[in-house]
Length: 430
Ligand SMILES: *Cc1c(COP(=O)(O)O)cnc(C)c1O
Image 1 (tube, helix red, strand yellow):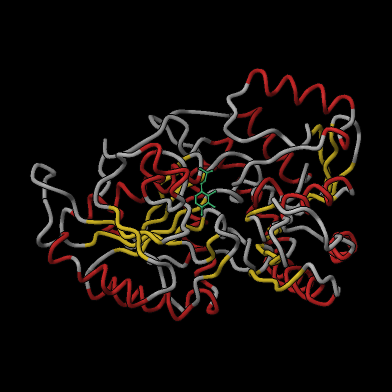
Image 2 (cartoon, rainbow, N blue to C red; image 1 turned 180 degrees about the vertical axis):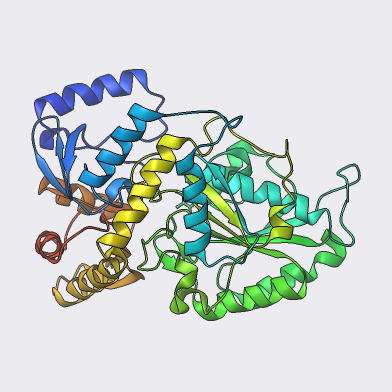
């Protein structure tokens, strides 16, 4: 994410005062908050000065059911009153049921297992650790970690996998990665979307050691909502198969209904029928409760983690599991996969049809979308929309990202489009 700034004039008095207090006591890793939010309902959220916003970002693809969804609130309240946390010395019904449901929804084969964590970065940490153990089983690899470098991880340029040291090692953007080097050794970046480059990266195995895994997003979210393309993903899968490498699909942003399927890899037009070996998920899974995890496809891979290999105090916590179950239930009961598909089409078509010359193309699937801007004024555009009561995201200097709650209605989309259609074409560049 790029630096966010708030225009003082557009802020109410409570907002301005609280933002100053925020700035005094928080490390400035996120840039200045745009507003201080107070409460939400459905697709709307209100700031501390009582101003209403239509939310086309949903806490960055997190609030799948919008705000204060009655079934979600009920499930979380009841679980909080019953059993919030146990540690992993104990299990709980919601945790077991959630693991079962996610394996089923992913179509993973019998014997597949879940590991739960608490965020996207943590999910990818687990994926990378599992891949490291897998790499030690490959011929030509350093089998016990005592000699030389481990089997490699291949990551893509423009990819984003999180901010912890492991996940950051596979995150492309030099400005956020390089200050923290040295990171994990044996992570090679490969130009995204270029099958020949991927083939070369595998071939470098003669010098650089075997490849344990390729990690990629089917739609590179933080890079500006850029689908890799089904043909490319199929070619990468073939290379992984030929070289016995794992394919890790990072669905932290795309997973759990966001693209109109439970997982984006279930979309033929994103993955061409390819299955991952490991899929990571987080953002939208628990509808606003911090939760994430991975599914390892197949028992052999799942069994590489043994007691002591990995863990987290909060992992699979019953409160988070109940929030996730309520989210999955509502997605099913309210037909939100189909809604994501239809509302996404409505949004992209509306952007194309509205005639605003600032827009030079739209992209995305389901409710993970972006519009390409004619010049790099995304920040000014985002603030202009915010001042008119619409939350959108300046994902790149020349692109706006949209990730509305999956419950968004046709009327909501119309309302958002009406604001977007009026965006001035002469906004200042970033
Ligand atoms: C957001 C995101 C992450 C990191 O998730 P956190 O919960 O912020 O740690 C990882 N991968 C992808 C694709 C993401 O969009």
